[in-house]
Image 1 (cartoon, helix red, strand yellow):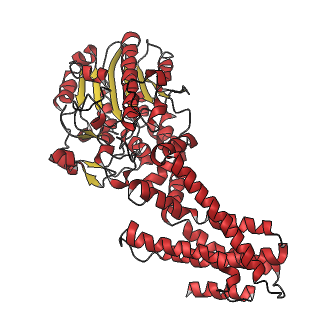
Image 2 (tube, one colour):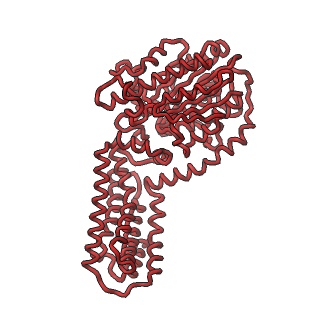
Length: 545
């Protein structure tokens, strides 16, 4: 009914039949969106939803609007250049299906909200690296050339049909015509904002705007933190470091997979034989996207409770309340200002952006820290995020094969060396007593870490905890619990509570059931979730071999 009304209005304004040959160029838009609905139903979602009426509304209303818009340009502007604008706008509204097709081509699954949240919070450099790694510049240029070719054909065809079937009819009032264009475009644009990748993107933008008041809300909660244990973990000034890895998959690390052909983790392999290091064998990421992981790992929020990010306490404020000077040192260059973890970072006493080309620049940040204070430091860099060859200086490359595996292993080797340097500097200059390392998520060398396919190599992560002698002697029970769970199963959304336990910072914002260092830790393999509480960890096919 609504579609029929749109067709009638368009015919009434232009005084020609809706399906007149003069308007054929506009029907490319309708055919594009109709075919998108069919392909989604039968191929992408495979009948997993009802009729895709949004795509049909966009195609019908949009075509009616573009017919009236073409009529306006021809009758009141009379320049073919004006039609170029209409063609560009029409092509722009055709791009969402292209994004869906590209995503399906790369991953084999439809786009989900979590991915668009990551896209919203990414930066141009990461976008370029994603395209070069997973699509290849040849395919990118081919798609771009295809879009430009369609644009040229669309404009040529529109002008040809317009001139061939021009009819001299007294035009309508131009203001009424523009009003009709606006009315006809309103519904498809509104529908588009709720459809597929565009709908997910708008939701991501809204969420990112809503969390901007996080700092104000958490400041009010800071004074309400009440510790049940006021003891310091060490008697002397000391340092605790949390190192957040990026895109490290334990399947592709020699320290975890002794059959792996690349010896890319020599230092971590040595740590396995050091009694002060606990290298965990069964750690999993709670999700495969950075923002979703860190807003859980750094706060009370986890996939085992119902807390929202805005109401959850964070580890930086807890450490600060416990008396630590808090630092967030990053090599991301302030590029993640809209992300939830950047809001947590801003709660630190000092945020240091090293802006180096490689992660070892963060060592310069460590050198700014006073060893006479109790320090809590979080390090967050680019790790082994694609493009892998951009994560390490070329002269440090050990594996020379021209392959993605070799590039990734060189990046892992660089991270391994960086971890060693952080540990050495902390031990020698900052009285390092605790160092916790975990990756935000894993990686698939073909598709990256998008969560839509639930590939478990995207959530199998490395994790270790180092504890100095002073910490061990003063907190023997905690060390023993952590050691006894070396082979236990764990997801990294419980890092917050585990660190609270390690810091002797159990409070009214703490759950002992999620604390790996507590006797009350209550989770077993069958209880754990990954991919945002969509898949049980127990379903990992590796566990069933």
